[in-house]
Length: 310
Ligand SMILES: [Zn+2]
Image 1 (cartoon, rainbow, N blue to C red):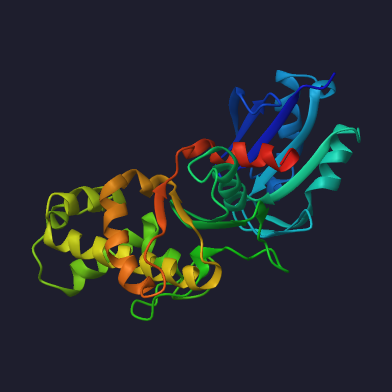
Image 2 (cartoon, helix red, strand yellow):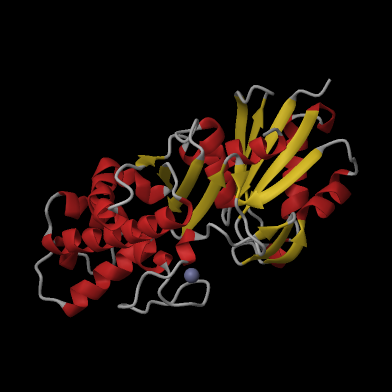
């Protein structure tokens, strides 16, 4: 009898795979490097191989995939990170494993992370969930009454590419300017800090880092009261809060979940965002939960596996 659910979270550098029992206890978690050669043409067969090394496909009820890029009806429209263009993942994976008794579902990676938090993490019990993952880029996912909102092109919930900035005109990976990702991701934080270092005379410990610095450095210095770093983080929080307020007036979520590497800034970042969010959300909205992800890096595999058995 089949006994496992499998969640696969495909990233640009590594692929995380989780094996769960039907009660969603995580039995095993492993990862393989993402093979980007030949436009990522070996990625799916390497995933199949890695799963098979752990267990037989005879035991697997279904496999869910989270993929970086817009997904519509199981087809990945385009994934810049993987080099994929119009990949019919479901069809290709079935062709590799040569069996049709396994359920396969595919969604965008940020959508699966949001779904994971909704089913098993901090957003459990909430009905309208908006999640933002802040790392090198910014991902977003929206779940309403148990359904991932993906839209007609699979780009719904792509919070990172909503336009908030009309000041810096930094170029986004997507080709546009003004995206939230350009000013509030880890790379965005560094960009804004560098801009201020160049265009102001404010004293800052960052000026001692001649060979560059990380977003974490900016956050750490801001926590210590460094003036320029504090300005940067206030601005970053303001962009995020603006976006949250706009989402509030679109879907009125009862919880915002923040995940990704930058969320390690923790309560400091949360309180900055909260402080700026409420003035924007008032007068109609006076209470919305803004919480940090509890599943962390595992949100994607939990969510992907949950696509199979929602
Ligand atoms: Zn963009």
